[in-house]
Length: 270
Image 1 (cartoon, helix red, strand yellow):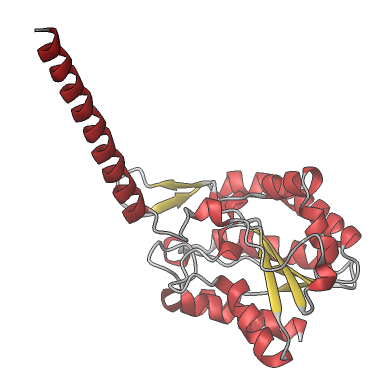
Image 2 (image 1 turned 180 degrees about the vertical axis):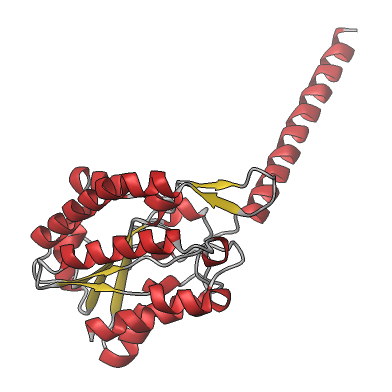
């Protein structure tokens, strides 16, 4: 009887082990389907180093540091390049040099987030090594006042008064961001990509457009204090061709939109 009990115990244990192995294999299969090898969620793709940070002299070529929010990360681009990746390809073709991009952008970042990163992280080590710095920021500061409409439709309603009141605070943070970048990268070409209006069809009175243009004008004044910094305007072509250049989420650019941004950036870094 004892031998029989032992046999059943061993059989049961083997069954448990087999079931555990099978469940582990199933879980791995699900993970592989959801996150294939080499793919990560957007927020985890913020750091992409193409050259060793610790020994820049060993990697000859042009080094680009890309900072900011989801626009610099490239959300909405079908190829996953974004304007930073497209600039890399164009610059490589024109310069006949290797081009490295450190993309440190974070989806959803506001001016507060980027400022905190610059003041409390190793991000400045990259800035000191960069030949070119590209960044976008500010869109999420203003977009946080966008709310679903009260009637339950998909249309957005903007609290323009809130956005207007908080504009000076965000602009002050942008000023600090620019000062830090210039201080740590005085020889780099620093390019700030301005804001566009993603909701022109929901803004018949153009109130949002006016606030965004205020931001862009203030950004140009701030950048004008530094000889190595320039603001690239993109408001105009999104204003007239937003349906062609916006992704399906009606907020981020699509591949064509990012290509237009990259073309503008190339004009100031050649």
